[in-house]
Image 1 (cartoon, rainbow, N blue to C red):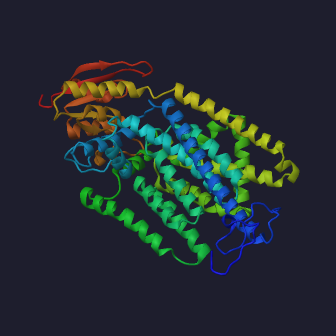
Image 2: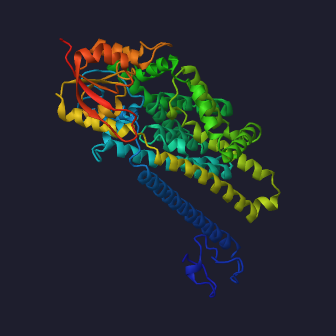
Image 3: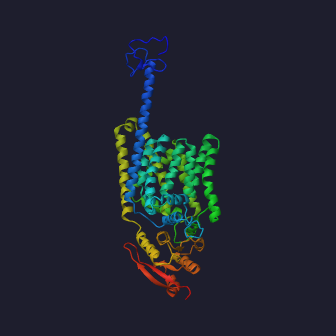
Length: 525
């Protein structure tokens, strides 16, 4: 002890603070002069409580992500459809040392998601089954996306909205139906960007917006919305965040410009051409069809009504949520003006926006209720019943998705494996849908939908059908083999296939309408 300092006999040295004030352990301590010690000790206790609470919340978040992601993965491990396999082939070729190409030796950008292809190529060294690996990433992304929605609600002062959206989002059938594609991963990055922005972690927000842009080019809309919101609120440009965004995205666009001759995928132009065909629906038409489908179920009418309430609430009072709503509107308008054809995965990024607005609607109704009802057990039970009913409705939708897989997957895989085992390695194959067949065949592919050869897409006009593009592609490229459903291409069969090609193998699969035939062609006849 310091020289000359006398301690009362009733206060042992171990109960002395560093500033020589006594330490007490409760406000009612009988040790004299301990008010300040009590305050310090209570502050330590409160800090410990905060740390313990944060640790508990982290454990809950980790448990949520693990349980939800593993449940979704094992439930939809084998879910697949054709389009993602184009990206899988880019990843597989890159991993195999053939370059960032679909057909080796042809520098054409036919994937819309370069970052996702790079991610699969890297993780493919750990797990070579890319379709299953991609489904696992999708499951993890949905679980993390739900967690980010919860954080957004907490940080934007509407925890009930975040909780409601977080519970429903991972099990939304439209999101789960995109398993295997980059969509779930892309949406997760966007929700993460908004969550960090809501927490005023602007550099992290812009970094995730950049990763979303590298996953799909329209991710730039997220950066634009967040940057504009920051400018409006703070009256200055966040130059460091803007620079970070530019530094992250610029290398890819410079590389793709030099490597492919354009930073934009040919699939964008192909799907714009497809939308011109009379047999195709436009993006708004597809959206209307989607809404009509949901409108067949009364519970979705209730959810839709609360979503509209949430939109009004965001416009009038909960204006922190306007950036998320603005991004959803901008996304819809952009895809409408792009003029792309209707593909179901284009609508999935709108799901978290709709669910967030639904959550805001629930929160708004809760705010309007009397305080006793809102804070009592009856309010909690009402919310539990509402979310349980909606989860039940979504569960039925998931069951339908599970029970109705794409029947083309199995037969396309069988065709691809047969081509890999029974054709020369330098053979070329022409078919309508190149994803699954091309991934398993490992042969040069000629697509009739314009996704691989951009010149094919340029043949699409309003009066065009896919038989017309097939005839043009076959006559232009003379593939060594053709994979056709004869019922789909009667003119091609009569005028081109019959004179020059001979059937080699026929494939029939339960659930697939018709049959697929492999033809070997000799164009020198």
